[in-house]
Amino acid sequence: MCINPMHNKKLDQSNITSSEEGMKLGARGVAHVEGVSRLELRTDKHYSNLLLLNRTASPLAWFVECKDRKNHSAITLPYSFLPSMAAKKLRDAADKIKAILGDYDALHVRRGDILKTRMDRFGEVRSLHPHVARDTWPEFILRRIAKWVPHGKMLYIASNERTPGFFSPLSVRYKLAYSSNFDKILDPVVENNYQLFMIERLIMMGAQTFINTFKSEDSELSLTDDPKKNTKNWQKVVDGMEEVES
Image (cartoon, rainbow, N blue to C red; front, top):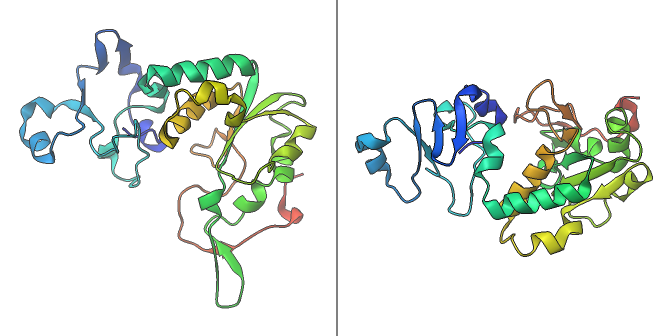
């Protein structure tokens, strides 16, 4: 299923219900079709009016963010339906962590792969997201989120940044928490990165204020104003203070 809000908002969420008898979207049913061949899906009329889960996903995954954002046939369930799709042990782990965090805000900081750069023929470093390296640096995060996250607030940070202590400068203003602080809860249930990602999604959804790296919709809070969508426009990387909002 696709959990990308750009797809999921196309669905009428008011028709979605969850019960002990099953899950339905209006009069339509839901079928888990992992292992069912494409030929059978096309020819068997029983699948013609069902929402099909795990049609193309890895057996390890419970969700997929669609690569082709124009392929609306990939839409299945809305983003708000995500918590009920996680395995119970993952939901329980997320609930335990949320209880410990108490009143908290959350930050998703995407670095790693998104910071890919290349050199042009004039020796200038260019990126598809020219402001992200700067906007996800701790000092810039502090300035950006000051108007949204009050001083002293518990702040849960989910990130693919691998540098130890990278976000420590944020501790001058906030109480910081990471998945690594909850090994006793996570180690018994997390077997792969898919499961950790799902738990962190649930934690972030439970935050009072959630700030993502990129905006998916105009109303969302984000660390950068760079568009998430790949524009294929390699621009000069911005790394100075001069363009940071005061």
